[in-house]
Image 1 (cartoon, rainbow over the protein chains, first blue to last red):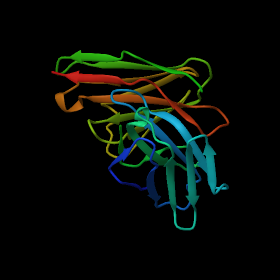
Image 2 (cartoon, one colour):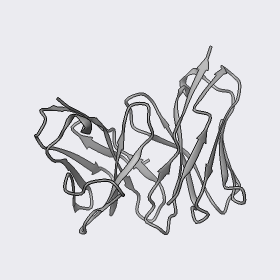
Image 3 (cartoon, rainbow over the protein chains, first blue to last red):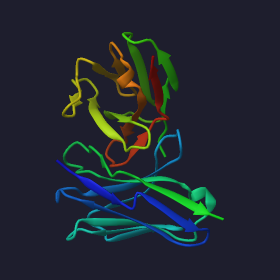
Length: 113
Length: 115
């Protein structure tokens, strides 16, 4: 089955700096890669996703890049703000195989003033 | 995005009792829903895939007789934790997939505490 690794487990940045979270996946059949933001005790919220036919996608301060050859994908947050502080999860799925999501282990992002 | 509700948000029960958790898609019909369990400071672990009108598909290591799943309609899936024990205490979250799209949207979760 699919295995997703995520790094770093914790990330502390100064407000206004950029934050980068990286994930690798094992199953070359995976073709859908969403990123979720989860605040303490709350539901995961989809913040951006990318499909395997695209190398990069951007939505305001958030961007995701995908390297299919290396099976890497990364989340980039620019101009970080305190409200960006949360746990971020990457995930991977094969849309032809039931859309089951395999999650990474999560990154606790702390944006300091 | 699509809205998914979950009820109850929090439940405390005695060991040996059964607890039912409901997951509803409010503004779309979901042929597929998923149930996850999340322990403190850990990731989401898929327990089972719930398909409307058919039996759920359980992940390896998840006891189907302990975690009963029913997906009786296109907007409702239920998870029943039978004979709950303290080790079942966790945050249970459902998600629903928007038909013909890849996105999954999550419910707010249910915090289960078994005494």
